[in-house]
Length: 626
Image (cartoon, rainbow, N blue to C red; front, side, top):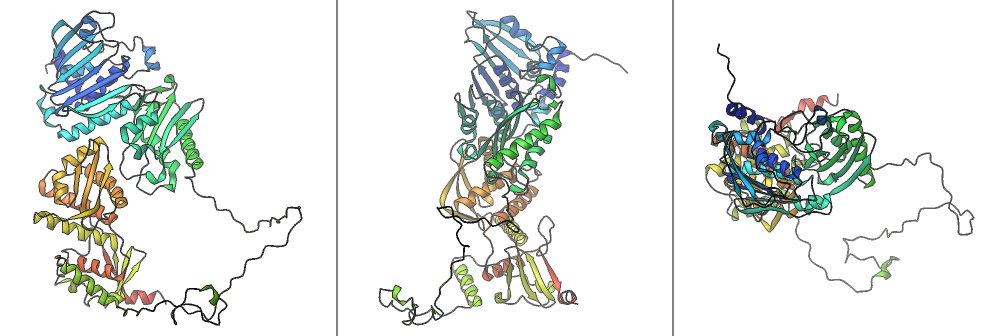
């Protein structure tokens, strides 16, 4: 065995794997350095989602020529000098690893100048090696240009995701820093296109509005509390704004973003049952804690924090959010029990007790028949004098149409529209020996189940799962036949979904079109929905409710094989469509759904394996009454 010490450039490349995981990591580290340098304006520009260029410019304190060279050495830092300083960290960075790691896997050019210097300097680094230093004209501050990221680590570059995915991560890091410093100006551009131009905001809520729009900011409720352990301030979303997607959830401590599943649980416990199961509210929570009572020196990315009194912070956060929701009438209503309560006497203006309150009597005409004569009270009725307009014209009553005729008419109009219904399966009778009885004998139970008698008993169909199966097979046929089944909206719906989510729509635009979604970008963070697949709600409220679920479906990881990816997306869109479809109310709609279900290849299970229908035998029904 031959043990040797690795060369410094290889050691730096290995260490860079912990700090620089993707282009967004470079953006994060350089922006944090800019803020720590005292800048009030920070500009970020990327090309090809950071693969080609990441440039971060600031007007901070700048560096001298010697400092500009030494800052790329490992553990070179101005933030700490003694071990005790680790217990009182107030800045973003402190380890001195970021620039060394970046220089190990890219080509870096730094132009910088201090206020007191007449000229600046330009420093070039590549593969952890100092290439050159020269004097240049430069404004005060620092200008970092990182080119050809991972050019000397092909394996790392190969595993980067698409440009839209990498840009989404860059936007996320940009947001996390911009949300901590509303008093600073921030700009983000991608391939020359401005994504965010943020001016100094008067308050954190204005900064949130600038970043995420009024649709998010207008649903926020202020929270504020202070104890000897922690000061908590910020905003939480109203319960009706909770969404299934895990977006807009932020924790900050002493101006630093961090993740905490433990404190997230405190937030969710505070909301309790006033939000739907599976949904998460937006929150922007800022903690102020004594630096000596927490440890941020845990991970290289500095997104994990340990608190000395985490249980106290948990309980304080829970109580703070609970109180804020209650003050804004979002808490559970109090049901006052009047049974056994003493009667409160009514007093007149003179202070004397009045008699007991009696219910007013109800007067009605027992001879009134709205289906007789002209529909007005009879002449002998005491109410006849209220009618003073003479006789109303009489119209012939339309003939009553049976449910079966109504259903037949609907199917006829369906075929006249050019959409022929799919024939029923020839062999579904093998599963159920007798045919389903006419729609007059179909019962829709609370919009969730369809009950209909069959020869052996009662068949029960789960409505949402039946829709899911029908939509799944419809999507698969649509893709196989290369045709689009777009249901146009009555009016185009404009929706702000955020820059990071726009990347998802750009990545999956072709697939969305195949499945019947007509969604086009309007601005950097807004889309226009012109149409949705058949079966989806087309009104504005329905589309706005559908979009967060669609974003969640697109965010899920999926296999890369084309056919498996299409099947996986069809399954997700089918579940999404079943949740956002119009409710089944009448017998004709229920009959149509059953017909569509039995035209499917699989009528018993959804694509994810959940049972769609079952038969309750007549013998089992009889046993219930024994």
